[in-house]
Length: 153
Image (tube, rainbow, N blue to C red; front, top):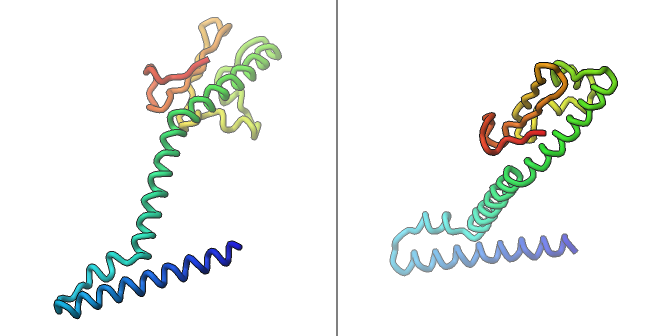
């Protein structure tokens, strides 16, 4: 079925290209003015290609905006919760929190992505002076700590 549709579309485009060339030749014969730009720039296949390219560009931009605004914060919040849980397990096992995220991550392949958030910015991990509490902060979409888009535990 797809093959038949593809063939019909191709035939339709070829037909439109032929009719386009025929219209341009007729205009050129009527007034004797060559229409090279019109002949090639306004070809149906080129217009379809440019329209498709524009549509894909708009769709990609919308997807990137949605990902940047809605998907990444949720992913980062989930990851902060997972890291927080792993930090609590570490403390329950060793009696204190690790000195750094690198120490927590170690060689664990699943944890390798925990160094950065969904925007590919590094997390900020700090311990309290008595090492009884920790703070894990993502700089958010802008990449700067201390702004309103920061996410933390």
